[in-house]
Image (cartoon, rainbow, N blue to C red):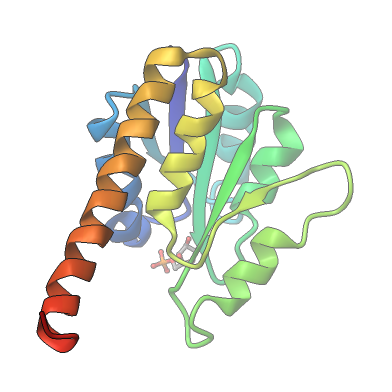
Amino acid sequence: MKKVAIIMGSDSDLPVAEKAIDILREFEVPFEVHVYSAHRTPVQSAEFAAGARERDFGVIIAAAGKAAHLAGAMAAHSSLPIIGIPIKSSTLDGLDALLSTVQMPTGLPVATVAIDGAANAALLAIQILAVYDTELASKLDAYRAAASRKVLKNDMIISEKYNGA
Ligand code: RP5
């Protein structure tokens, strides 16, 4: 199976990135985690992205806050699917990072999830890897079925409380 790369602009992004790590572990998808900044370590960021396909990565998740250039910088140096997580790390509550991540020029797409949406970033990465992996696709089906059961159970609890017998 191809690996997923989780790249953070700063170690201060780790509490959010950990939600993606948890999901990848749950699905037993191999991954690497790195801290590279598009602004503070531009050379290392570019080198990582440029070599990622050769190093057997299938997807790159890039998490960054403020003027979040990281996912775009990854896209500039790799044709692997890039998933951007805008991080809420500024006085603008992540809106700055959302716009910086999502507003890519034509030709260099970044699939951008919600602000701090690390779990969905991991799930999207898994969905990409599952296109040609039926075992992984089955795990995704089971994950969704469990989420449905949880909602239905909560509906039963709420219904009993408010709607009577
Ligand atoms: C971005 O600036 C990082 O991704 C982080 O979200 C934000 C703040 O970084 P630190 O100043 O905490 O290192 O580059």
